[in-house]
Length: 131
Length: 131
DNA sequence: TCAGTAAAGAGAATCATTACTGTTAAGGAG
DNA sequence: CTCCTTAACAGTAATGATTCTCTTTACTGA
Image (cartoon, rainbow over all chains, first blue to last red; front, side, top):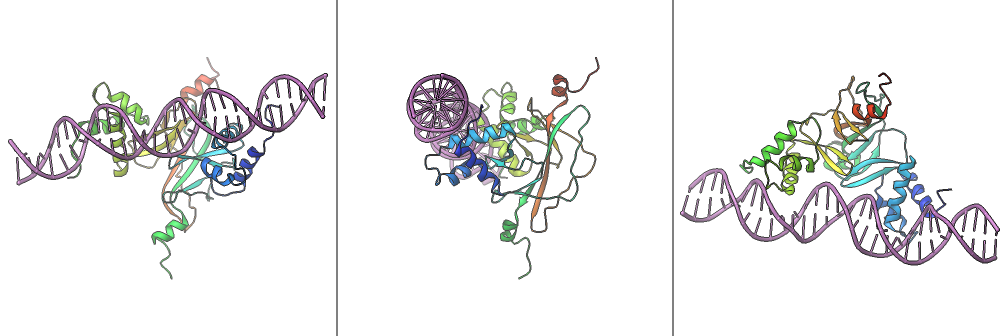
């Protein structure tokens, strides 16, 4: 019984899982603030850290100075938009594996694509010559 | 000629390129401090940022809260040791590509392995049952 | 030599994150 | 139901990496 129930903790995890973006701590805080007016940013950080240590969630990496979280702990590649900062899940055709050698202990293999997301690609006029 | 020569800037780049680790700004600062006693940490950051914008160097990512830099701008996978924080270049057998779809503009594909480096693997006793 | 301007140093400012402190309340024991 | 222990919380101070500002230094070209 070292982890008591908490409505706020549950809300944090639920929000993270209900969303396909990969929020920052502050984004979660802002989203939950209306529902929990007395929510503290520290609480969000503390619970995210606890979930991370549990393995309940994963950190995607740091984008624009902010750590981004992912409710899906399965190993899957991400796409980071260099313009708007969006982090999206992507699917890749083949399986990705890399073996650095027998002396290493590999825990995970993270693949991160960087570039412009569909929305930003459209705005830049790189694609969509039609119309 | 909007970029003048600077001994310190050159030293920063040279140090970065002479090393196979992937240093943090502070590591570079500490290393150069004996040779340039009046070196300022701000100067290191300023020049690293300039090189990054030039494309002269690349950022590997944030490890333990610190940004790590790489003098090798070619796209290649990295291994991050979760214990000692070492960042190493690794070679992988096959080519790694991922195509998220035609609406995306992909600039780069970063592959990062995480786990224990050979030294830490040895210490943990995971490998090397011999001896 | 002199003007113009890039580079650097020092330190303040910023921003995300973490730690501390006092308070509240969950959950088990009686 | 009440008491007790202690996790969880809000609020806020502290931390630490990075950036910004301001002033000084020192190239460079005329």
